[in-house]
Length: 416
Image 1 (tube, rainbow, N blue to C red):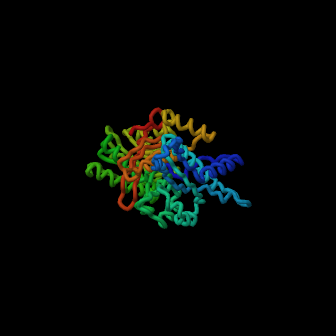
Image 2: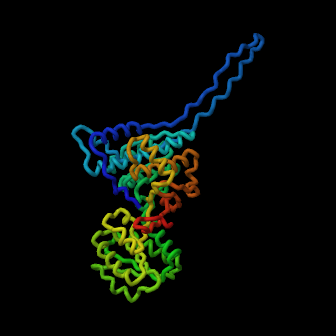
Image 3: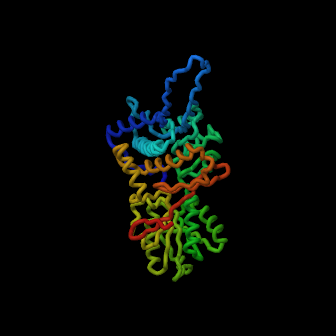
């Protein structure tokens, strides 16, 4: 799971600002309409006695043009005289530029196949008031699809003001639960944390089939966002056959668990914590247990971004991590995308550009073929993740596809 707050380092200097301005101007209105070639009319000499007018050929129907409104945090107000970007707003602009470029590259690819789009781009400035104002914009209201805003507070402000059952609103980069917004027209592309918990539970139940699962808590309440759906999933999937034991660990003390551990079967430990100090001590204690007992660890999806977690330790612990953002840079479609992106923008694509391309290709094709209503029946294999949407009553559509990764040969490899 990639949270939109995990940014790549921003580009440097005036070159970045120039690229930002050029990119935004190019984005402001991007019609991709193929010209319609009219057949040339031949001069026909009419006989004098023929007084009936010549029948003219029927005018070809105008091509379908799909209009998309995109709301991203460019923060162009920071370019005004006397203003400047902060570190935070610069990172937000970096996200906006990368995502826009990837999305537009996807629409260009679809346009080459004969589809036609008009892309309208708006600056949310990452301000709730601006998002609220854009919700009343007539051009946005008349478009067929809205992509954005990006961050949860802006999404909440926008969706609370405007809802049109025939015009879906896409949450493109935030893993926030759709229950935060409660908008039945919302399309949540990045799977929320609860679906990571369900996927881990499904894998444990189907592949490992332990008698017990130990959940190791640090004591922070936000861990319940993972623990509650995980326990619910295990009880449902196993028919309560698997016993779940929850323990709040203090200073890495796991000695009390020894009598409950199996000397032959896998002892599964679920660790939903993200605190560095807690993880460092607790995983070291698990490493000691692993010298005597077979161990398998399932960690929080954010572990994939933690450089303080060492691959050799995680491999000894048979560590699994769920992810909604795994890119195979050797795959043919990835190589083709990177080559096209470099050619178009003369720079390397960020993770947000990859997401923008996947989402643009998927949503653009559905929109152009008038198939958004069939989104739950239309799966998609993207570069960073697959899309498998489920309809949630009152909450819209949610992508539920999660990858299961495991440390093998000191790197994460996909096992499901």
